[in-house]
Structure formats: structure tokens, C-alpha cells
Image 1: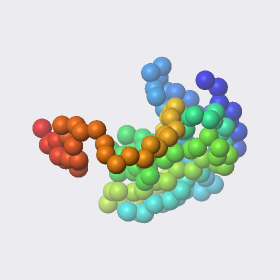
Image 2 (image 1 turned 120 degrees about the horizontal axis):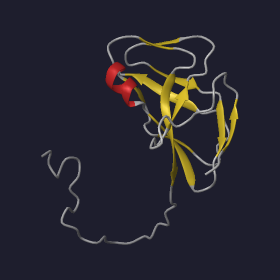
Image 3 (image 1 turned 90 degrees about the vertical axis):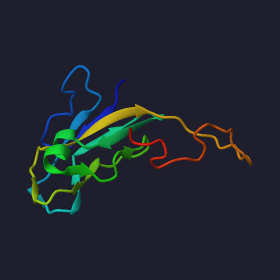
Length: 144
């Protein structure tokens, strides 16, 4: 699929790292480093603006390496970029580690996955179909 993009950053366009990659990496487009203290959050701009077709969204997700090694994740994961949004893509990062984390210009901070979605039509009813699970949730199926 083709997606229109405006790149106002100093970095190359996002690209897929491997043939089977689901997402492209987003890079920080900042004029000076950002120090993210433990439990602090910030919005990091990317310099990217996209035009998605209706029926698609762009999901902003954490990079697994940053999350596992540094405790840096996307706070509203996944963040959604709607098809009618035309502003700059920003990434809400949070530092869940006990150490300061420095974000540098050009650093790969998140990934972006393009996904098709459906729109629901609500049908008001007084009862739902019974299932074996019923209303059990939040761990009701166990951990093993």
C-alpha cells in the first residue's frame, strides 16, 4: 500500500529493517537532547506527517530493545494515529527505569505499524449469548 508522507526531519524516511518486519522505526527529531528521569514522560516529535486511507490507523508501539534493556516504553501503547489526523507524529515516552535516559536526535524511539480496522455498529440488546467463560476476566483463566 502507498501512504503519503511529509518528512520535515533531518532523517531518512522510516523503513522496514527486514522483509518480515511489521513496523518501521520512528526517530526522534529534536534540536537538543532530552533527559528523561525515572517515571517522567515526554512527547518526542518525529518530523513526520502522514495521510492514511480511511479504514487504516498507524499504531505507535514501543521498541522491544528499549523497553527490555532501558525501561523506556510508549505510555499509551499502542498510540493511534487516525486517518484524518494531519499533524506531526509525536511519541509519548515514559521512563520506567530507576536511571535517567537521554534521548538523542535521530535515535530510534518507537515503531509504527499500519493496521486495517473496522467500524462497529452497536445493536442495543437486553442479553448476550452465553459462553463457557461468561463474565470471567482479569486472570479468570489462570496463569498456567
